Length: 416
Image 1 (cartoon, one colour):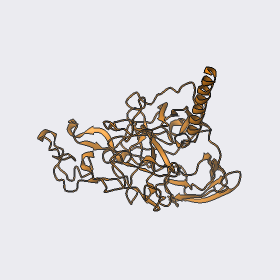
Image 2: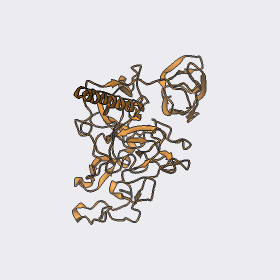
Image 3: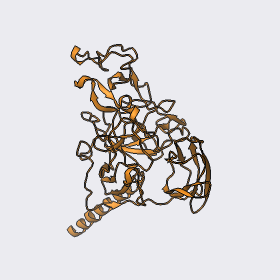
Image 4: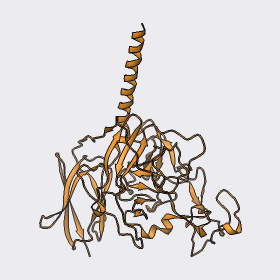
């Protein structure tokens, strides 16, 4: 009898492990990454996107350089240079709401985009007069030095985005639910700017609006968003030409219900990847596609944050011995659909591969003589890619893509 009980316990344990592994294999936290399968390089000849994804029954380990596959730079007035960060981020497969004291979204990496680039919060790390009260908004103070993809490197060489990563996905596609474009370090997904109008998945598609609003009646920066009156020594500069409204994070106030998202800049909702619902963050932009505060996450995380990812030495986790390497599976849809803008182009153009397209698309950019100028491998649907024309003369070019099922050609005109 005792032996039978032990057998039952043993086989029950095996079944539990098998169920956990099946769940892990189905989790979008494993399948949503832009894998670099061909040792492709980006800025400075550094390996781009995500090199490897490993997982066990509890976590996903994402190895990346923080260098994207799209073209980056230049950064006007920024002396920093991107370098290989050799990150290994750990994302839990079982995120949980934080029922205790909210965890502040600090400086440095707060999550990782699906292409392995670090996510930073809305602050540039500086405060007015260095007194720690009025925190400078990175988009206003550093934004003029952002590249066309709205990113830049920090003093340690970590290329990152504080705001909507416009080259990672098609942020003008308001007809489809945005894809997962990253994960926060509490394990919850980050989507692009568009979601279902209603949290239950109904009502069509709409742009998700932040519930942080500018304090438009503020003239003097002598009160904080919660109404606290600051001392004279802690006052910020008066609102005016030198420091317009929006320059500081405290220029915004959270007003519940004024937008679609909560104080963390997310909501619990149904998404294409989580049909039963999940908490999800959304990047926020306005009707002109301009980044809208707080841009990615709010001031605090929604969930419990694991150790090992944040802080100056964070992002260098060690996967366990029992991890499995994720290998993406081709999903043939027998078509290629994409949009390309701008065309004609002066410096850069961007093409977005529609979600209804094939996976693992290959091809290249050719000139009029048929010379291959740039090769593409393993392009994926729901993703945006850039083409740098700055070194090419004016003329006609052709973007030719193909899968085992179909071919596609798009004419691009380069003007002076």
